[in-house]
Image 1 (tube, one colour):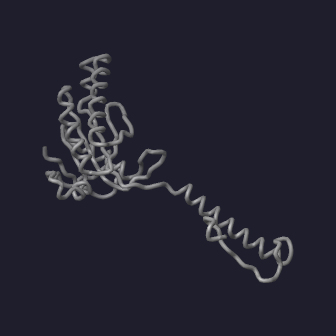
Image 2: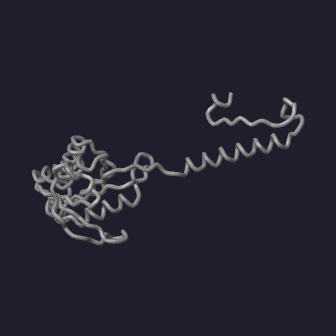
Image 3: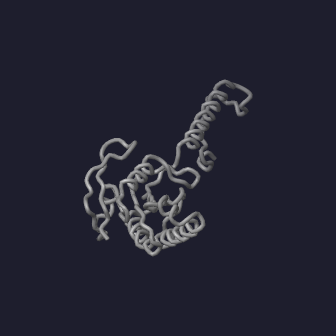
Amino acid sequence: MARHIPGARHVEFPGTDHAPFSGDVDSYVQELQRFLNETWAERAWEETEPDRVLATVLFTDIVGSTAKAAQLGDARWRELLSQHHAMIRRQLVRFRGTELDTAGDGFFACFDGPARAIRCACAITEAVKELGLEVRVGLHTGECELVNGKVGGIAVHIGARVAKEAQPGEVLVSSTVRDLVAGSGLQFDDRGAAELKGVPGEWRLFSVEP
């Protein structure tokens, strides 16, 4: 019977008693308590331990957005921003990316493959030129915490910092991303080592060649 009940355990006690309320009741109660304590401890660990997934995170940012907004005025800037958002979302759908957040004029998205993330980033930088805009894009691949469908953790912070280091119209990636797409045909320029604010150590960054 125990073999057919998930999580069950078969325990035999000495003696000829068949009812738990007769004979050696203490041994029965102690074994039951041990089983329940172990089960509760396992459940508590499962509930507190976050899921972790390997993901490539992408961050975009419009170059000179404040000056552009001041030049156009609120109404025209809102219209341009709406067109920018629609254009990026089309590229995310095209390359199977997942939009996670928008903050002002920037996008935060994730991908399950770094090569597609890079190609999406390159497509975005080209597409927004039609709107008279330039964006900087940063990417990093790492193990992320998955909470309520959103990714978080140090890998996300690294991706955001990489984007801050990008030049106008540039797609900048961490060395992790560059190494993972070896053999994909993508080409990179070495941008050297950089210190990313709040992230320990130096990080080697690479610019994606057009």
